[in-house]
Length: 253
Image (cartoon, rainbow, N blue to C red; front, side):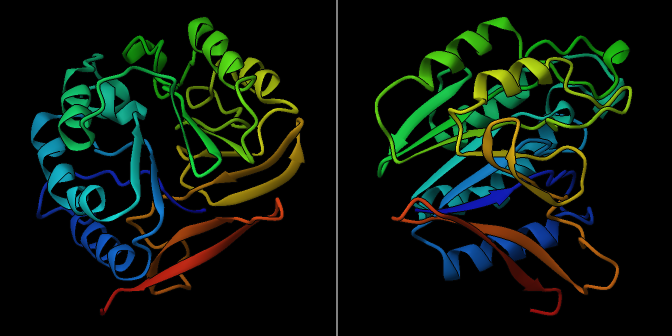
């Protein structure tokens, strides 16, 4: 299976600096990876407003129509109006997700395709507003559901996804119950995908999880030395291996 990992698109307006990179990335995926499952791990928008989700829908809808599958989970910027410093309002994200993907089920959202179990968490489930800043929390209910899912069946791979970073310790940015999430995933999760910190990184065999991959903000240049946009293409091999390769989208395309 081919997985494309996107995160932290932070769409605002059609005049915003994320709009054109987003369109270019989508076009690149459609040209090269129609057989991929596309995963977007939150912070779809910048401030969680209705108009921003309309822009996100416009940019992302071709992936839903063209690719094998499109899965999205919320980030703190999607449910806290005005980003990390506003009141919590989940209605706009729910409406966006339902309209875009036709999925109305809550989180964790679990499905198995081609022998791969995919589980998306809502790491904003316990977000409380301005006092929480950009913190995340999965919560007890999702721990229990996730644990059940990770015991179901015998898939070739188990992939868990969520917005907040499993290893972030900075006050105001951390996943409050990261210890619990890692414990549930330990020895039962082959791949964990996340975003939030805007820094791309990878870890292998950490906390009992086979591979952990963090995405940068894909609608921004990952490195000032690279005059292009990048996203990761992850391949789940038939022999049980996992490979991750950068896909480069030139700014001048």
